[in-house]
Image (cartoon, rainbow over all chains, first blue to last red; front, side, top):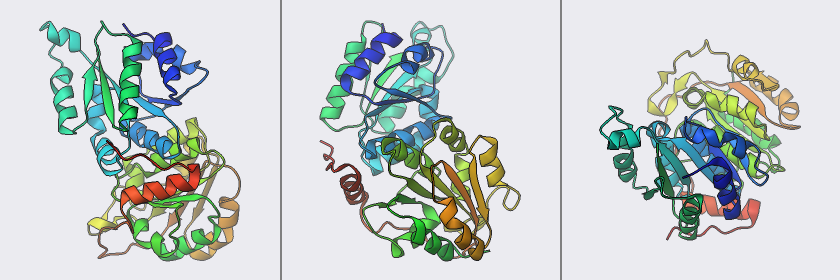
Length: 160
Length: 194
């Protein structure tokens, strides 16, 4: 299970400096912890393509940002993702909530988000891991550290 | 009205030690005016994302201003960046180079060309320092004030459209541009992806 305080503690332990985000109803619950974090700054943006470009600027300037968005925003942000990951080759790290994943697994949702999220990441050639409710914030931190060690763009999917 | 080159020549005189990010049409002119490690020709780009890239850089490097040259077509693709800039103030100097055209695609008009008041848009989201110039002599007279002091600053420049322009090219590969820029501002040499 993930919660705001444990995620913030894990990110701060990794040296993450900025969280660039648009909340959804699940990761939105992390907002109080992100807003009051002592070692990282929460940056609210208007669209997800913008989040990716802003994080890229932070990277160029020597900071360690992550992008925290919902899969719907991933769908919108394709050109920005393509450019930053494949033209600029910056090691962007995204955490993406997958709307309706659990309900889809139970056959209880007609939401198309879970159908397209992973194929779209594969199409954009962005490696990823899905961390479900059995995982902890420490697993998120491990994914971040591994991606940064490889200087590789990476996504963590969080089923919702 | 002024030409794009006139507008950028005036900027070159006043940019100081700030980073300059050039996109689209500006990217075809700026390298002939300045080609230092602090000049970042954002080609290939994600159209509309230049201001957001500049914003991130300015937040990361608060003592060093970042000037971004953005066309009106680019601006229309990411108007929300103005709101984000007001939400998280930084030393960004956003030049909206407005020719009313998608120049590199053949000169088709942008939506709202000639009707959009970019200065009013910027003020409406809470950016206090907003300037507009529609001729070279006014821009030349106002540039020092507009480009002095803290950001965010929005400068709306009306320029003549140029037809028959080809897509801009960067003077060097993106990886080399990033290496030069990062070395200049952070002293770090980026690792290649494994």
